[in-house]
Image 1 (tube, helix red, strand yellow):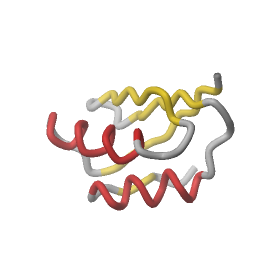
Image 2 (tube, rainbow, N blue to C red):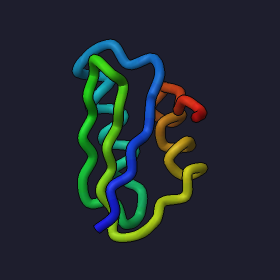
Image 3 (cartoon, rainbow, N blue to C red):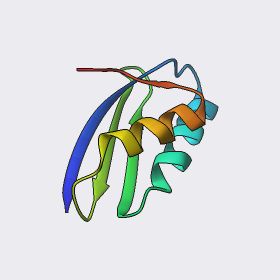
Length: 69
């Protein structure tokens, strides 16, 4: 299992967390998504390396922005 962490901008409530979790969770190979609302940190557990553009697209689809590092 691989654990990846991302920063997401714009989340303010439980609905935001659910939207991001659902969209990122739909990426092939993702087995778990944990969102820390106060920090905006999204921890993703997957079976392999994730394409950051796939994560960005999922976060965009949820209506939020993946912070660039």
